Length: 166
Image (cartoon, rainbow, N blue to C red; front, side, top):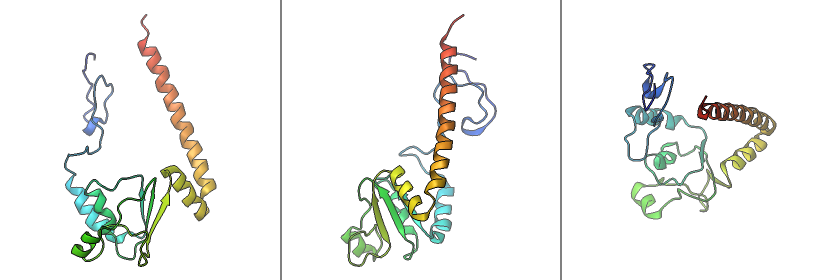
């Protein structure tokens, strides 16, 4: 097809499309869109079971995600890996809600929240190093980046060919 036509493989969210000549909506939820009902169900089911909450690269300002840190048990450790401290306890909200309502890194009563300042990549590498997994992580990182580079080069090559006329 041409001029914006798509061959439909019958899949949902563009799955099975053979050819794209226009915008395709990714399988994500954009800001302002409603989350699927499954999200609320799984939050209620999964968050209380959480044994360690890792929070990476976020402003923790967009709800409902900003409130997920408060949905784990009071004994669940929470690690924020970020360029800056975010999501901290607001004293008024803590009073109104009887605790919770944010992360607590600096108070004398803080016992489970840890802030690791840096990029997500650097923070994950440091966490892997502390757990004895750094070598394995770096091997995986290099292997997957090599695949991405190969895919990128193949895509660039086919784009060059598509732009040529006979």
